[in-house]
Image (tube, rainbow, N blue to C red; front, side, top):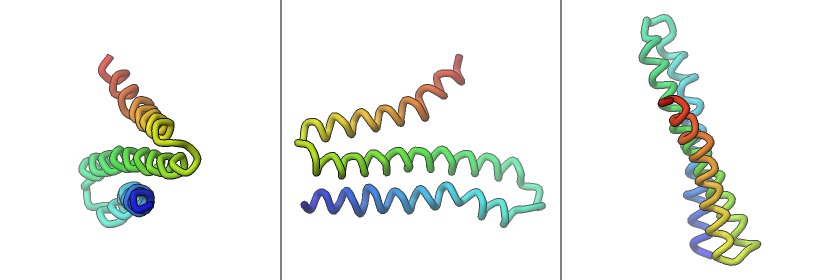
Length: 103
């Protein structure tokens, strides 16, 4: 029960707050540096925040899957499902685009 609460508060709650901060950060950044000739720095920072935000979204969804599946399945299927989800997000969102970029 304690582990489930930790997964909920840290994994789901904490990661979602981190995600929102990262994905909304470029909007605030743009408002602050608008017309100050910092476009290149803004684009680089926004890209970094977006990539980290997507990683946080994937981890938050994986934590939610872990939490829900722990209620409906035993330990082995729960771990297998969660690992599959982590690799699915990592593969589709990061490994595949990076591999295509290098070709």
